[in-house]
Image 1 (cartoon, rainbow, N blue to C red):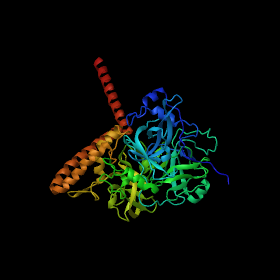
Image 2 (tube, helix red, strand yellow; image 1 turned 45 degrees about the vertical axis):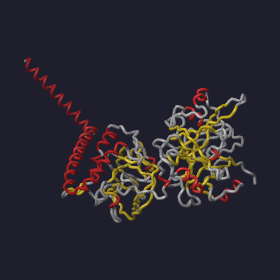
Image 3 (tube, helix red, strand yellow; image 1 turned 135 degrees about the vertical axis):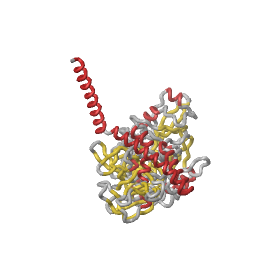
Image 4 (cartoon, rainbow, N blue to C red; image 1 turned 180 degrees about the vertical axis):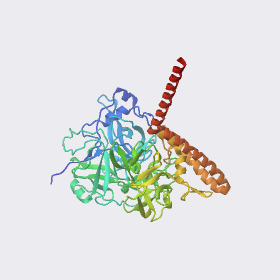
Length: 589
């Protein structure tokens, strides 16, 4: 058997890109601003270059990633190295290092071989970038890094990079560090990176052409024993696994990049491969095999809030669990093309199905927490996909109206995307742990998710409606009316394209409103029916005023109404003009 040439998927490239001003600006031990983006052109040039061994993230057989929000945790590491030149003076050079994964807001996981250089003096990470030709990105300097020296095999050593400043508004990925790894043969994983997009087998490594765009590819888990024969080396099942091959996989430069499973959890780190990229499987270091190293280095740090994955038993959703899971699907219309999108890929401005063939824009996310895991209800019918939803989020039924999901029972009929007259009977309701918390807001307050007509909102009480005297008031109406101020700013005034979110993932524009209504419900339940009646009477007056205001604004922005008003004004003006002329003519006679 002819021996194939295997290589760690990044033997660091020596890219000479620091111009005189950068040498002056980035000196050894320089303390640049922790999230300084003034060196953006330097990082862009670094990543956009290939030299020597083609040290760049290279994805074979994949497709382009269109949205920064799809893999927000993916980062490219850039190193600065110092070594003496021929005159004995210190010289600094830039090196594209590796891919990496953000597992806490200030910590990245990568391969130890990416950082194991005696002359490495500085590291930065580039985040939130899918196009190195244009677009904004975050560039953050590392404070330090650590390599798992308890592992003797270089192909299995993991490393952690600690950032000086946490990444801002960037979702993390959850490493698979609890229990045993239940990955099975032929399971589908996804890996991503930049670079060569075809099989690359040039033994001289001189003709690699890198992509300017982040690429992704789905790969299948392969038999580790067969993979070890391809590499002619021993692979430890508990610490390594193989995936890809047959035209898909990672390539030169991809060391440190992630492999994520169907839940978005980080299960592997790209380690080594054979230079004939994509033909043979890629070898990954198994994250679960080094769970103690990861947890000990990231969790329970003094003065730092743990990422949610540090707790093996995720908490129930917070009170403000206005959410669907990331795997839920929505129908999106782009011009005349209709396609399904995962909830995690949805963006403000997308035109989404809200029922009966009507599409409306997403103007805000009431809740946006990509990395959060929580308990949700999984609701199944005979024909629709399982709907994962927080218990207090509302769904629309045929007989009970719009109610919180917690009030659903097997046998209830849910309205669907096809017509408000067509319903699907609930066959099963389970409690599951799901990843991601998303609540896209639409102007009507409705959205079709996995074929089920749902609300954009939560109910503040776990019942079918607010009891007020002899009336039962719809939670949907109250929530929709109460969100009018936020909707006025974001939808009618179009000022929320770059909205920010709290630590829990709640949009800044609605956090105050949610707290206000939460306090009202809690307070009135404490003081009895009289206080409750008075307070809710005042609240209902305010909500009715909001409803009336929105009706006026909506009518004024309706094209047909605008045409009617303009026609009326023209008619009145014309009548006055002719009346004035007739009166003038009679006076002259």
